[in-house]
Image (cartoon, rainbow, N blue to C red; front, side, top):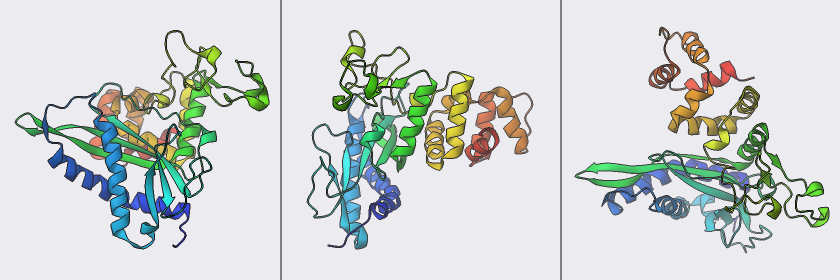
Length: 317
């Protein structure tokens, strides 16, 4: 058995990911063809499972170094969904022995107003090479009232930069994270299990594992932390400044923001002022008189494939 490094395994999965998405779509277009297409069908979870199945199939068929790694389901209540393992190695999830990295998988149905996916993994639960996978899909019409669950796009990238950006934006919106030395439950610092848990601006917990004394009335938790779309929202100039600094500083954060904004254009439009949208048109030589923010965004999407790189360059410091 040849040893494979975590970084090499990450590269292999990234290179194989486009092919895997194509194979899933080929399969679902034939096998899951159906009349209707219920939004709350659980299909997103099934697509995540298919991603593991087809990735493992690709790794095995590809041969070479790729055959030295495989994907496995995480057991019980571990914070991630899948693990990439050294093939044939003894695996111990608690200690991560045998693991190369972990993958947290999320699916977002582009046909609903508010995507349900939440990325709530904490930095202390995450290793250097751990990855976030996001699948954008929808029920796509075939004709005669038939449809199939098509994956339109995906994001696969390192988790830690996105976690750090999410957490800084959480702080910018008035949230905080529990400090073991001042736990609301009064835990002894050396025994506190709530260290790093998020509390919202109202000092209520946003994960089930947060302090019991911060539990919102009548609900298990606030369910706002880590929303794949909502975690990027900014509601004031100070938070917007943090957002722009984070995007400028990190290519992974820029790629994730660009991915989300591509599929949720209203989020992108609302992030910039009308004058900013008009100024980017001018900088790119696109003539348009007094257009709205939405009209400017539409023009950029139609005529400038890399317009998000221009936004980053012009308005981020």
